[in-house]
Length: 322
Ligand code: ACO
Image (cartoon, rainbow, N blue to C red; front, side):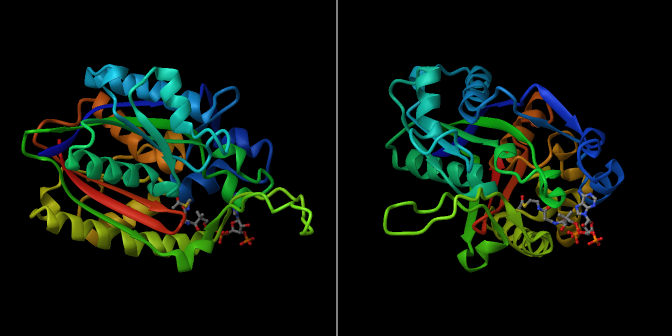
């Protein structure tokens, strides 16, 4: 029984901020950002929220799939920037779209969040517990950036992407999957939470933002991602050249180029959205997939490899027959 993505949707905040706009408020330049990362602009939230963008992406995915909210059994949101600790973003989405029968929860696997959600949904669908799932990657990363740290804040953006996933009796769909975690190296990309402030401890009320060792993250990505993709493509009984598109987490153009080189795959099989979106963590892969879907690039029978990688450290890849 295949687990298939039957519809996609995405939602970006209205406000676009270019590299030149950033250069007006901090010591940076379009030249520095675009040559090192490939990013030219990103969308930043003003009134938009993680849950609001998630719900809009979900509505678009359901419309694309031709399913109603009443048919959704499961909602999983991958996010590190839910609007509050509780209720979870997925619960807010359930209420907003009226998916009355759905079970809803969030997961935190940073930039691998959408991929982990896909795998969790697959496991539920294959046991027959649920038939139709809505999986979402959504972030308002601009609220956890230190806007005085030019080495991180220029890299990220806000937005949400969603997919409707269904188990059907047809062959194909999700052919193979790989996931991994390396908690020992987790500190190379971190964002501390609030401190304990109970009466027994002294606490600092200092605000904590994202901290990244960019070079360590780069090394992790360019070794772990090709290894994971190789494993997954082999498990699907395919060769690298059989894959029509490699839709990867959009962290940095140099990472995409290095992965393409290591896999000996032409760079034009790696679609790019980071130029106009920046890095949107868990939302990167579903937004990219939705852009590809709406451009008509995805044809039935095509083989698509997906990969997410990031904080945790976490990584995941999948091969799908569209
Ligand atoms: N504008 C101008 N100058 C800058 C900026 C900026 N925005 N940011 C840093 N610099 C300066 C630094 O101050 C430093 O100056 P110095 O030499 O005078 O000290 C110089 O540029 C080099 O800084 P580095 O941090 O060493 O820059 P590096 O060449 O490593 O590039 C980058 C940084 C692009 C982040 C790189 O490490 C990289 O590609 N990392 C991959 C990881 C990544 O992309 N992470 C994204 C999020 S994580 C994820 O999604 C998995």
